[in-house]
View 1 (cartoon, helix red, strand yellow):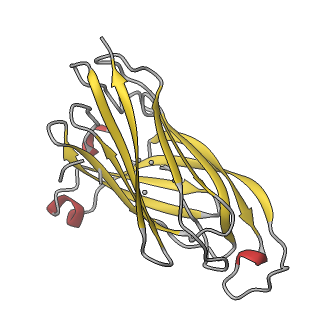
View 2 (view 1 turned 180 degrees about the vertical axis):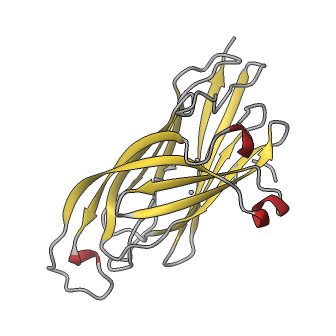
Length: 223
């Protein structure tokens, strides 16, 4: 269980190919991570962005990896349904995204809000060693339940299956900011106590070909 098992597009994309398979093509998503404060022991907001170009294969799942040394709150530290972050996605929406639909069917870019919330673990998740459970809800487009495993000593991994939506398809641009604290005031991400380079990573898997792409963002934590 090394590293957060935020699929964060991002987010995290968000992270995140969110539709049917009307336009299968290549698979070259982009993902980045950023922290609002990069000093030791700080409690920063974390922003995850995910982008895909037109006619790409869509996403099936996402894995977000936070390196060792960072801390995250355990499941019982945050109340159920507490808001952890917000964001948005700009994505193609319309009948032209539907599998097997006519090539000239209508599609239009739409900007849609996203919310990240804490959810209570199920008994099965507790038995499986899940550290915390979060839910990314991209309004009317998709949901991504995230299961977080790991520890500060090994790193955290957040894994999520992305629910398909035949009425949406790439291109898209997704950004999610995990706030410094939850709505109830609980610190979420806390930086390591030692300075140095830390590598955040996201693995995105295609729903069409099964291809997986891992994208890394080095972040230097300073004194």
